[in-house]
Amino acid sequence: MSMDTFPIRRVDHVRHYVNNARQSAFFYQHTFGFNITGFAGLETGSRDEASYVLEQNDLRLVFSAPLRPGHPMAGLIAEHGDFVRDIAFEVDDVDWAFKAATERGAQAAQEPTTLEDDHGKVRVASIRTYGNVVHSLLNRDQYQGPFLPGFTSRNEPGDSIGLVEVDHCVGNVELGKMNYWVQWYQDVLGFKNLISFDDKDISTEYTALMSKVMASGNGRVKFPINEPADGKKKSQIDEYLEFFGGAGVQHVAMRTDDIVHTVARLRARGIQFLSVPRTYYDALEERVGEIDEDINELADLGILVDRDDEGYLLQIFTKPITDRPTLFYEIIHRKGAQSFGKGNFKALFESIEREQALRGTL
Image (cartoon, rainbow, N blue to C red; front, side, top):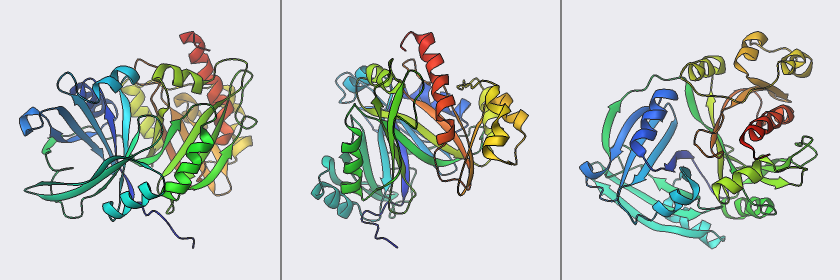
């Protein structure tokens, strides 16, 4: 058993900074079925920003918005649009983790500090990673309240669609920067490079990208990192970097244990997905062997399937969920497979390119 040099319990939450947290919370509650469980804002004594906490099983999203001009995030929201700011980790010891990370080369974003209220206290710090993304480090073992000190409980249930947890978060970085950040995750957080894809693995006639998947010591936290590769036309990564204004989180993959149910519910609520040609399903059984699901049902919903040595996985990708062609979501159902759907890349990227062509950005 190799030593885990940077113990991380799990992804604690993913925090978005947005122009309008109330509307974002409403959208995620009513489409993705999250419960609104916590709130901080003017009513709770937060003078500068409003935040809503949304939960579904072990998945927690937070949406925060500036309440007045001159807020430090206002400029970044103007630059990037609504964006993922923080992929936060729950750790055993915040002070140790912060010290270890900064000694190994991480830039500090927030020194360790204690947040306190009547429910107890939470220790929190944060470090910078690619673009304007940070990793908060937090421990709430001595806290009994909702989310964090300063938040009040909200009980506004969503109609759950069976999302379980964050499976992985993908970062898009500038050309030539992938290996820099791969090395950063290795050096600073002790991650290992699980899988690498180069432009021979994932290219179409027009576009290519390179990708490396990094995983934490315990395997619970997985971060693929993409960079553009040379292609005849503008790749989806180039498009992202242009419209986002630099490196950032491209998509968050949310795991379900019943993808047919989850995707059917999302479609009924108006979420749009990338689609693949029907011919993808003609060769499906030949390519992945026998599966439990009904192939016609998968074809109707546009769900992709891939197999590796350990089993198979089912996955589907939403179209971008903001006006900019930047952030989207993946819904993934793992049946043994620990990989990332390499067999689907070509079909998927051709689908993205059809969307790019419609946007006039290919």
